[in-house]
Image 1: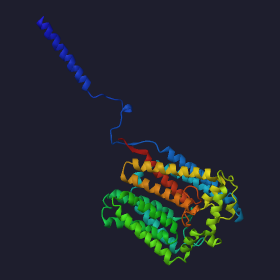
Image 2: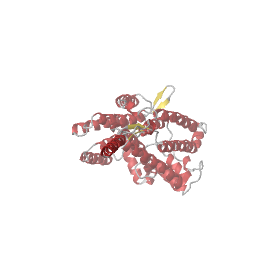
Image 3: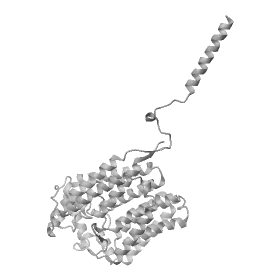
Image 4: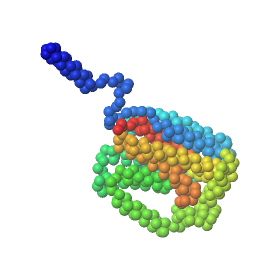
Length: 403
């Protein structure tokens, strides 16, 4: 009996030992069901919300450019479809560029900043010295096959890529005043070259570059000092040169009707268009003020939108921009590295600043300055560069780091 009891006890111990070994043995999970480890970077699909909103804004832009421009085109002896064909072609090419770039790993653009910066700077110098003035300004280069090309749009992409790369390469570059002034000088030099002929785009470039630096920098005091100095310089400039071109624009902003046939003319016609739209607008193609606004398909197209689509249509378009900015910020926050985060930040700053300034000019909230509405205003270079950058943003959205 005793030996049988001992034997039974030994058997139970063996079973218990086997059970414990089986219980503690790592489980083999099929690869298709395995969960990625924390911190692993995975590639998924693009941000479809961002893609959808971009497509909608571009299509709205093509429709509204035709609505705003057909009468202007006919008055110039052109086909009523002239601007529609041109913008439609750029939109098709832009979609191809956007989707192609969305498949290119964004890290391949890591070292593109300096080449883009140098090439765009050389082109800007050429424009300032050699290019023919059109409409009183030198902003374009005529290239074979490509036609008119605006180098300042390339500068926007160059600043985004270069600032992101420099900070990614050395995260302590903004810890010292020397590094801070170097980064500011990179942005300032590009803005200076652009500002020689196009002050509004120079402001956008400054907002993009300094905005990226501000977000990456731990020292807020420096920006307070620079902001105060910049505001003082602007006030001094307006006070000393108030009778010049930009000073007259500032005075026309304060009272457009004081120069209703001069600098205040475009602002007055824009305000008439916005006021005429009411809640639901006059209908597509029914705008009356496009007969009075010079080049209505360009910077003032939002006024035509407000007149033809009303407050409801204008608010819907601004909502689309809000969604695009929200998705861009989310992509920047969830990016897998500093370079992707800063590039996404720069793209969002570019689109947001242009949209806000454009609407502010149309409603006379700020002095009149020529800033196009992203995706919507007529202009092939602007549309292609913006859609290229959205393609980069879509690729950044493909990558995520599991928590």
